[in-house]
Length: 523
Image (cartoon, rainbow, N blue to C red; front, top):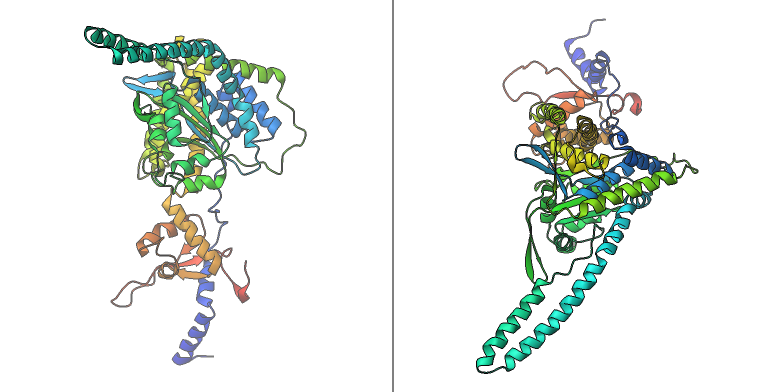
C-alpha cells in the first residue's frame, strides 16, 4: 500500500508522539553498565607497617579489641606521636626548607563507632606523661611560689617604707623598693605541664599554647572545635592560631594584661568526627580560602558497624605496656628541648624524597593532574611526608633520634603513609564538593532520577535546574560530559541545519536505568 504525502506526514507525527524516533535511536545505541557517581574508588587501608613495631602492634591490637577500622587507631596514634614531638623537632629537608613535625589529622566515623574508646587507649600514655612531668617539676613550682610570696611581702614592705621616707633617706628607700620589686619579677614560677586540650576556644588555646612554650595538642573524639573556629561563640571566625600553629609561624598572644610572642607555634590536631561534619566544614567561612582545610590529613575509613565481633581479643598486656613505656619516654625525653632537635636526611632518604616530589609535581598540573582541584592540600603534601618521616624516625629511635639521620627505609614508610592520606584526601574533598564538574553531574543525575525522561535536551535541563547551580547553559556542559563519560547519557548527533537561526540544543538519550520506557515501566 502506498501512502500519500499527507498520510506519510500524519504517520510520522503519530510515531513521533509515541516516541518511536527515540526508541529507534536508543535501539541503535548499545548501553554498557554505567559507573555510579557516588561510588568511590576503594580506599587503601591504613599502613600500620609504616611504624615501628611498638606503635604498629598497639594500633592493631586496639583496633581488634574495639572492633574499629585500623585507620582510627592509626590516625590517633600518629597524632599522639605528633603531641610527643611537636615543637621539639624539625626535619631539615634541604637548604632552608625545614618542616616541623606537628600534624593535623582528622578521621570521619559515624556515631556509635567507639571513637572515644580508641582515643582513650591511644592517648593514655600522654596523660600519664603529663602527670610524670608535673611530679618532676612540682617541687620547683612550690619552691618558686614560696620565694615569690616572700619577695612580694618584702617588696610591699619596702614600698611602704619608701612612701614614708623623707629627706635624704627617701632616695635610698626608693632604690630599695625598686630593687625589691625587680626581685619579685625575676622569680619565675614554672607552669604546670599541659600536653593536651579537648573542648577549647581558639583564644584559650592560644593562651595555653603560649603558657606551654608554644606547644599544645588539641585531641578530641568530637568535631565541635570546627564550629568554635567558625565563630559559634564569638560570631567571628578565628583561624589564626590553627593556621600559624601548623606552619610554625610567629604567634602574638594577648593574655592577662600583657602581650606574648611565640616565635614558632607548634599545634597538633587530632580529631574523630562524624562524616557529615566533613561536608559542613567546606562551607564554613574562610576554612578553604585561608588554607585550613589544606593543612589537614584526612581519613575516611569504611564503617564496620553491623559486622563487628562480640568477643574480640583484648590488647595483650605486654603490647600495651610497651606502647605506654615508649610513648611516655618519648614525651618526657623531648619535653625539655627548647631549641628543636634538627633531624637530617641521609643521602639515600633525600633521594627517596626527591623521587616522591618528582611524582607529585605533574599531579598538580591544571590541565591533567588528578590533584589539581585540591592544589591547596596537595601543595603541602610533600611537606607532610617529611613531617611523618620525622615522627616515624623519632618513634624508631626513642632514646636518641636526633643523633641519627633519617634513613631511606623510614622515608619510604612515610611515602607509603602519604599515599594513604592522598587517596583519602581525594575522597574527602570529593565529599566536600571540591570537584565542581562531578558535583554538577550529581545535580543533573538527581534531576534525571526524579523526572526519568527517555531523552532530553541541554536547554530543557538548564531550564529545569536551579540557577544557583548553573547560571548559563555553558556551565552545564562539563556536567553533561561527565555523565556521558560515566555512561549515564549519550549525546545524539546534531541534525543538519536547514536554514538560518540558532543551532538546536544538543539532545541526549538517557540510560534505561534512569528513564521511563514502554508503558511507563521503570527499568
